[in-house]
Image 1 (tube, helix red, strand yellow):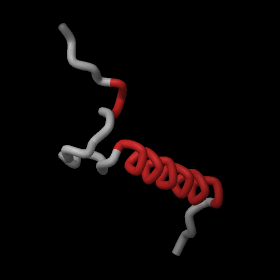
Image 2 (cartoon, helix red, strand yellow; image 1 turned 30 degrees about the vertical axis):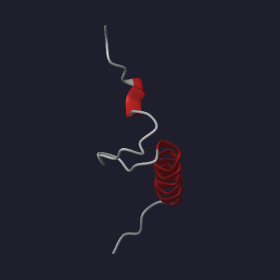
Image 3 (cartoon, rainbow, N blue to C red; image 1 turned 90 degrees about the vertical axis):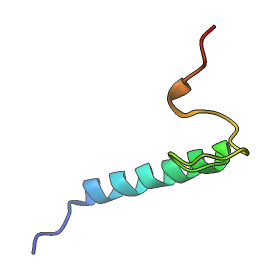
Image 4 (cartoon, one colour; image 1 turned 60 degrees about the vertical axis):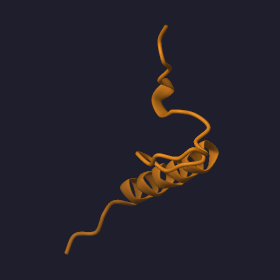
Length: 48
């Protein structure tokens, strides 16, 4: 069995931590609908 490289493992762990931070800041998880959501991901804004 081949083990994942340390660089891949650290990169994936740091990505997951950033995802959790964004979820906490926004008030909802990725793809989750919530009245408590504070923002939208990817900078989407409604246009006039």
